[in-house]
Image (tube, rainbow, N blue to C red; front, side, top):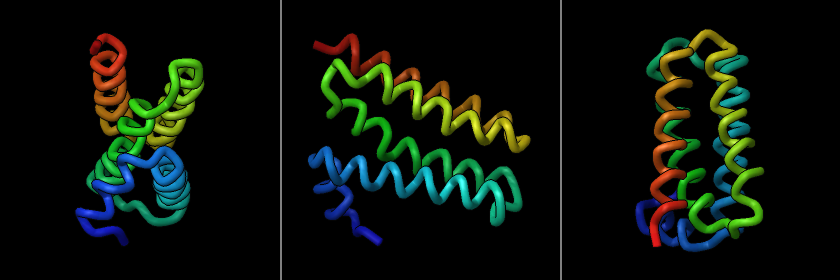
Length: 106
């Protein structure tokens, strides 16, 4: 597990961001299927995805942002498919809000 300095360093490295994002997504898929017992577990998992998805979106060239955005939204939608609609909606809203801020910032 990365310490705070490791997380800060990883957020400046596109390859590290991608690796961590994929790790969080794999963990959420496994968790939804076998581990998560309540909405709090799902909320933490959504937050973990967003922790890397947002900086990775920021670091992604414009040409790849649409595809990345659709991928992240699809992964967060999995929570709704497993009955955790509030967590999915909150995660999608947070991601879209961050994407909007990133795309309109100079």
